Length: 447
Image (tube, rainbow, N blue to C red; front, side, top):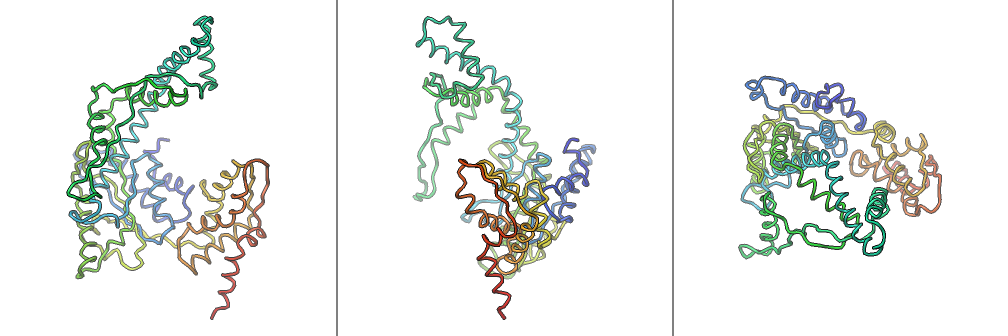
C-alpha cells in the first residue's frame, strides 16, 4: 500500500514498530498526516481553506517526542527538519533568524528530490561512465601491451571492470576541476564575520547551467573516477529547474518542522531582559506558523500548509505561558508519559531498532555473537528506572548509557580475529554494572 494513503490505524501500527507506548501522541500525528491526504483529494477552492492542525507534545526528555515526528516523516517520505527554539533570537540580535528553519526545510526537500532523480537516471549514467572508464583502461593497457588486439583488450577490460578487479588501477581521466576554496573577507571590522568569495563564485557558476565547467586531466583510481564521473553524468541528466520546483512544492505541501525545547522560550510575562527576549522569539515564530511567505535562494515558499510539531518538557513553564496567539496556532496538545521498567523492557525487546539489536549487529562485524537473556533485560530495565528516578530522568536514553557501560569491555577487546559467543545473562549484568547496583542498593538505606 502506498504510504501516502495509509489510514491513521495503519500509521500508528507502523510507529508501534519503533516507539513503545505514547498512544495519544501517535494518534494525534497519524490523524494530522491522514488529514493531509484528505485535503489533497478536495477541490482546489476548498483545499486552500484547510490548514494543518499543528501539535504541541508535552513530556520529559527521552520519551519519544522527536522519534515520533522523525519516524512519521520517514514513513511518508516528507521533508523533515528538527530545530531547537533556543537557537533562535529576535531579528536584529546575534543568532539565527527564525526564517532559517524554512530555508533549511527547502534545502532538505530539494536534496530529497535530487536523490530520487539521481536514482532514476543512474542506469543511464552507468552506461556512459563505463564506456569512458573502459576507454581509459584500454588506453593505459595499450601502452603496456601494444601487441594485444584492441578488441581483446576492450573485452578483457570490460569484464574486469564489471567484476570490480580494477578498482585501484590508475587511469588518466578528464574530470571537473574541484570547487574554488576562497578566503572569508572580514566585513565591518569583525573578523568573526565575513564573506567567502570562493563560495559566492561557486554559487554563481552553479546557477548558470549553460556555463561550461573546466575539466582537467588527472591520474585517478578507477574507483575514484567512477564516483566523480557518475556524479557529473547524473548532474547532467537531471533537470535541475524541475527538481527545484518539485522540492519547493513538497516543502510547502508536505514539509514537517519539529520545534524542540519550545518550553524554553515560554515566559510568564511582565519581566525584562531574558523574559522579553523569549517573548520576542515567540513573536518571530508566530507569522511563520500562521502562514507567511519566506524568501529562499530557490524562490519564495509559503508556510501555510507546513505541519509544525512543537515539543518541550514544560517542567518549569506551562503551555499556557506561551503567548496566546502562538498557543492558538497549536490547537492539538498531547502529553507523553514517563517511562517505567515495563516500558524499558519492551524498548529492549520489541522495536525493530531496539538497542539490543543494534549492539548485536555492531559486534557481529567483529565476530562476536551476542545473545541477551530475558532476566538480564529485566534487570537492565530495572536499573534504567532506578537511575532515572535517582539521578537525571533522561528517559529511554538511559538504556544507551547502561548498554555502553555493560558492553564496554567486549567492545574494546573485540577485534574480529576470533569468533566469540557471549551470553548476556543476569550474572553478567550484575558483574559489569556492579558500581551502579552498589550505588542504588546503598541509597535504600539512606534516611
